[in-house]
Length: 316
Image (cartoon, rainbow, N blue to C red; front, top):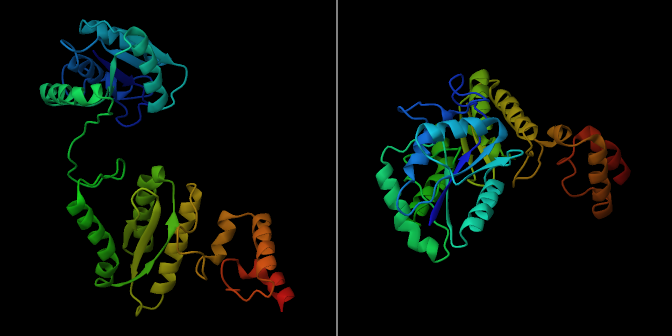
């Protein structure tokens, strides 16, 4: 028996004011006569499916009961989370509940805010995956992407597509060089902050009047913004450097750091004070004193010159 588990949390921020904190979008009828939650519950009923199991928060318990009653469905259970902790804890709680009802239960974990235009095909896909689940495998369902999406990522489907992705990645720098001079940055951010950071870089681009192409390592948050400028135009290089500094400061502000792989050179050394407190820098320089007492290795890099001055003088 397949136990449909409807994940029914949400903060109600994406379709405001139709959706709001006390009434997230899954409870709204944005694409039909039924709410997204009701359509999700109805989608997996009938032969082969147990009554839906709902995981939700205390503020939504009565809405869940009311909307299920409106479409004539009785849930196998409604699990109330004391606090929303995303998918994994909800899945674990639902699994324990379902196994208590049926030790051979198979869990179908689905969001309650998806709009599915062909529910019959979705059901068929689920039943097609049932033998694999019975064999102990985890089965996932999705759609072929039509574009890259920073909020969800991108899964390659084979060696040929992988080769095309890497070709585009490796060709980006040369392609930008055909357009104009550019400065390549290196900063790292939490992947969860990528949409926000890209939005802010776009706003900064307008502010500084310089175009920028964002090249980054998918999955690890290491960004390489390429800022375009004209080396023959007086003041353009300085403007580009100021733009770059502001991007790197943004990386630090969102919980990232000044570098992912290029290190800290002359153009970044003065930004170290944005990431580290003076005490932190002193400890780092004390360690350098031990391993490089003469300060022969890149003495003008990594640390702001004003911060490292006493150490460099003592090494002379």
